[in-house]
Length: 144
View 1: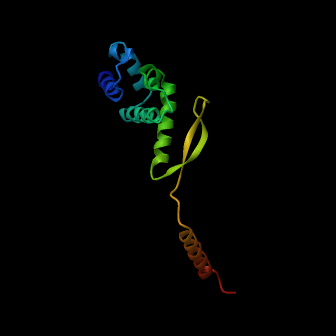
View 2: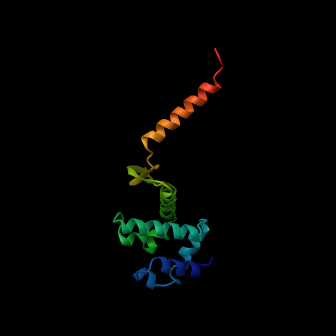
View 3: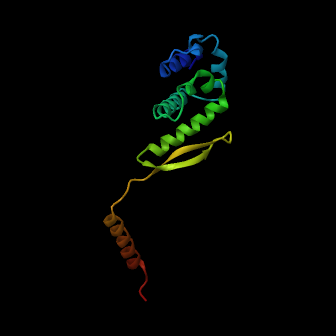
């Protein structure tokens, strides 16, 4: 992955024509090299921008939060965003929102985040499961 392909991907993921993007690759090549030196990958960039787009869509963040200087020029900030994006991705898989909690980022900032909960089960399913567990325990118990 080269700085020019990363910059083109960034422009594709963040289509707004901001002054920063109009400056082009030459002014950002050192920033991209620093970003790559930190070990970040294209998938990380896609995940973080997708996370920011989701947050912006739901009015949790301002659209300028995905500006180049906010996302790429600060590796620590990108690392925080990446960990938040990964956490949200893990929570979204097969679960529904339960409420919000405070999450402390690597920089010590506290942010409210949605907590996910497993699918609700019917009462009769829960009782049947507990009865089956009790029967199994009785069958395994030694005779007295």
